[in-house]
Length: 384
Image 1 (cartoon, one colour):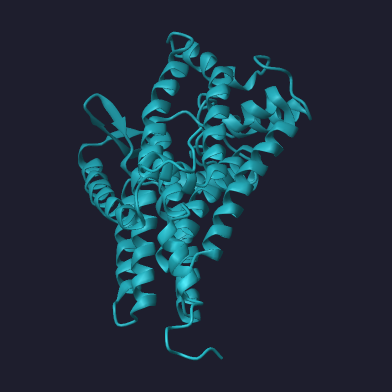
Image 2 (image 1 turned 90 degrees about the vertical axis):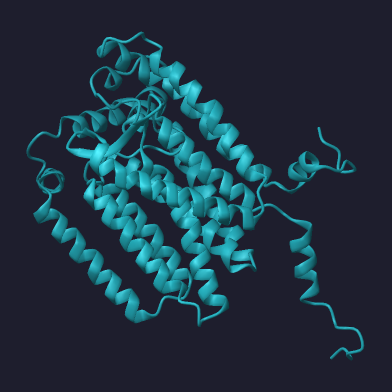
């Protein structure tokens, strides 16, 4: 245990970090590692790999992910902003390269091979995009003559264009929802709300008619016709799990669904550990989002407020999409469950998000001193 009397970077970090947030992130990663034992061996055997192939890789991804999260949590808000700008530039450049040199999987170009590793740049773009937009919104709020909102809109257009070109409509919807929520918190005029709402609805309609796979998934969701094998199997697994599950290792869905260890990990959890376990998982994500919004509400600095709110919204909405697909409440969309699903790019990128959240929610002495100064009567001025 680190004493409060100690001085140094580690001691300051320990006593200023939001330890409840840190515990939530580590706990979710622990649940994900546990579920990898339940879901991935059957997937590995089905495709001819050693049974614990994905378990070992999951563990290997966890080590750098935790290191990234803890390392970023030491940063100051200014360093977070600078790191996000660099990360966003690199991610956008890689997203552009993906369109020409990327690996095509299931009709989309979203991955690129670097040094023997398959990387999905859009995953790393998301937290960086949130932080940079938070800075732009905050600068406009601080000095209205700075066109921060305009730059945020231009940046949003660039990101959406690159995502649609891949195409990755799920990430586009997630990014749009988070960006819209931040813009609303930044004081978006009602005219902009109407314009963006109409634009978003028009974009969905256009995607339906332009991209056949989008139309197919929406039609399957609305009519129940066509190849709905994965969704139907996932729903049946949840029903079969009942309240307390079939027991560890007793699930069937992981032996049938190709993406049981990624997109449908929630169904595996429901079948083997029960609905009660899944409700607890949903409660954890809810607490995480509400705690982040509570931090944002109390925060006096606009940049910190917008960034923290945007980052926890990103994690929350991504969780809603993944769980909604598993429950057949949303059209099928390949999206991981944050900190739980298998996936190197996803896990490291989510830990970047977690690291930014931990850094921006630290209880810094200079911030407390600034807050106290707001109520201090200047020397020589009579108190009212």
